[in-house]
Every structure is written in structure tokens, then in C-alpha cells.
Image (cartoon, rainbow, N blue to C red; front, side):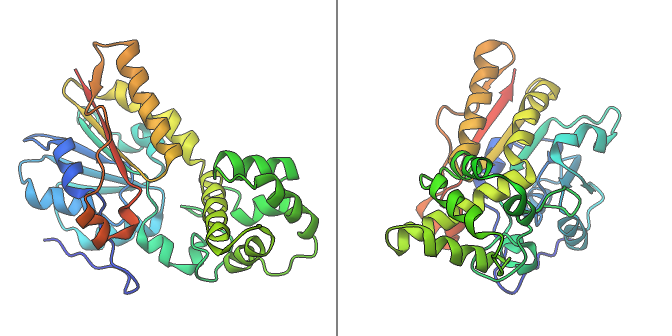
Length: 301
């Protein structure tokens, strides 16, 4: 039995669902690893449509996500584990039941964005936290309080691709000793005040800086870079790795990792498609947060 409920603020809609299922190509006997379980959208759909799939194992570093999905899916083939997807081999301990299909959806879930206490959104007041879990070390506030001007400029430029990164870092370090509104909306207001140009440019800077802080807080790119080669090498013949990204930094990393794996050892496997799969106009209309999504896959030979 499957139930799918979510935040009254905004229902969770799994991105590129049909494309993910097609790329994974679920078959009888498959053991599927969902390394970013989130609100369980992929799990619900695949378990409901493919009774011949043997196991579906979800991993997520957000304990709230794990507990939520456990209340939504009642299926003996399903299990959920709390942890980072880069630690999947230690978490699984499945013996001979090695996953032959793996999916990663790297987006922040609608629930996380819409929950003010998580600190992911600048549109609602909340703490400058941004941790996917509550044990990952520094929060966004820690970074803003303790990093040097150069370190902050690098964070905003490298991980947010913000062209005014040095300007922002300089003004921030000059003001932070007397800064009082240490909230998501407080920091967003600071950025609006000091970033030059019009409203749209200011909003872009806010989005970029929040993205940069979130990526650094959760070591998102580092975890992904360390994990892709490990997942590819662990797949059995005809196994598949499918990854959905939401910004250019992630997509470039995945693209280069897949290209490197296929070019350095052609017998290892090949990319699912040369170009990424994109959401349809209809999906973007229904779920605007899917607009930047891209799907890439890798198939073991």
C-alpha cells in the first residue's frame, strides 16, 4: 500500500519521473538503490509499477525524510537507511544483494525548501542552517561568521558563480561584527542592500549566495565527485547509474565523470545519452522547480 502526503505548503513532485524510470529500466530481480530518497517519489512510482523488482533501498542524510517515507510506503521490498549516499556500501551490508541500478536526485526537496527551520530558503525567515542533516558540522551561519574575506569570496564565486563575490565578501566582513539579523531573510536583505544594479540582479545574487553556502555546508560537490567512480565500478554488467542535477556545477561534474569513465576504459561502460535529458514544457509548467533539472546516465558493459 502506498500513501503520498506532504507539506500543505507545496506538494512534492518527483522531477523527470518518467525519464528516470526509462533510464533505470527496472527489470525482474533488480535491486535498486535510491541514494537521495527525499520524499520517496521515485520509490513510490517504481514499487507501484514494477512488482517484479526485488528490492528498493532508499538512503538519505535527512532523518526527517527517512521517517516520513517510512510512513508512506508499506512494501516488504522497501527499506530506508539514514546516511550519506557516499557511504552506501557501509550502510547497505547486503551481502550478495549488490544494487544493480542506482539513482541520485541531487535537488533539495520542496519540503526542505518550504520548511523555515531548515534555513534553505531566503523567502521565509529561519535560521542560517542549511544542513541536510543535523550532524554535518558547520552551519551557514558558522561559515558567514568565521570564514575570511577571501574564503567567502571564493565560496560565492566558485560554488555560486556570483560575479560580485569579492564585493559581497568585502562588505560582509566589514559589517558582520555589528550585524544583528542572523536569519535567512536578514542575510538576503543585506545582499539586496549592497549588490549593485536592479531588483532582478539582486535576486540572482541572493540565489547564488544561498546556493553556494548550501553546497559548502553539505560538501555536495565533494561527496558527488568521490562517489561517482565508486558507484560505476561497483555496478555489475548492465547495471545503471542515473543522476538528476539542478545546477551547472553538478551537471559539469557528472558529465565529466561519465566521459572520463567511458573514455579511459571503453570496456567499462557508456553514457546513457550524449546529451542530458531535460524536463518537458508541460512538466516545467506544472512544477517550475524542475526547470533547471538535467538527467544523465551511465550503463555498465
